[in-house]
Image (spheres, rainbow over the protein chains, first blue to last red):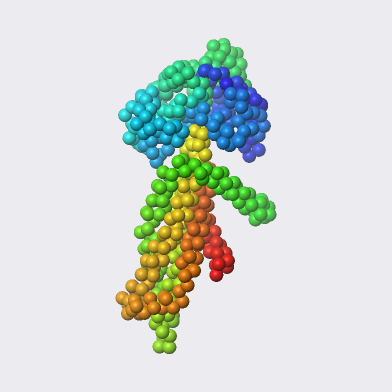
Length: 255
Length: 253
């Protein structure tokens, strides 16, 4: 379980996160939603200790990750798989080597076993034949899928997704959503998905947390999201709906 | 921004961050498995692939030094072998190391900063950290070690090629036969000279690779940031290399 308590973060004197608290329960898929610049990705980086809060705490399975040594933090991080916004594949390595990378470093597996495992991971993301291809020669969607294969290679307990569908066409976004949902079921992991794509949220998440202007504005289940009469939340959800007409009216709260 | 901040606070805080980064990186020195492959790759990239340009620059340095020494010093009252006595110690003590350093500040320093800078802005360094790897150990240690090991090798090649170039051009232009050139070289040769050159090369190798790693690792601001980091790495390496050159000369000579 991940517990975030009263997190506060400033960059250059500007408040990015203010008194943010959130619980992420084991086995669930939680979507962190909000407008661009609302602090979603910053919150995600705090969860895996890539950023340190100015105040507040992040507890992973009861361990305060800001109060432990760097070596202990590295051990905690091995429970995580992270899919970064741009994939963050190592561009000097082939797709195979990218997925094999954590296996070679953190396991005692032989090259033969690693090869089998990489093939399983690439098959999970429906790209069994791209092992020899370098990231630069893959499309954006394929890069994210290979990055996802790398993120699950060590069978983490938690998978964090930073804008997994941003910049992708609707069909590819849908493929990524199906993969996230499939992996959550198949590997029984806890997933945290940072996104502003409501289609993704509705298709993959069990719960949603809405960050607005650096504050945790609303949390609840997807059913509660549908039923909520919170005006700010409704405006955000409505802005994501398929819309024909004057763009100025998009996102206006239904009366 | 106050002058005190520009002249004192900022440089000191950069020095502190530089020291902290190196300390964190070298904590993983014992974990050879995590960086061995990278170390071998960097030895090839920093060392082997630099040989042609280093040899070319050193050969020309040796040749120019010979021609200019002959122009300035040779007269009926000065023996010709003085050319060898000047060119050879110049190459061994100064030129081979400094030419190697300057060329590698541009070639290696800029490449390291661009590589790490790009990895930083594309979140590849975050990805390494998020996996539970000490990214500084994985990325910085092999580059610095490769620099410290390969720079002395490149220095020796530069010194050899530079002296050969100087002797060769002196012979071909009829300024001084090779035998006399080498006779002059032996006149003032001190066994400590090449040792001093190797010490210099080790220090230069450390300065160029560690500074470039520091600049690249702390890159921010997308493509423009990578461009700035690349330039900064090459320029700072050259400046600190000159400062180190003077300090080493004062200390050891």
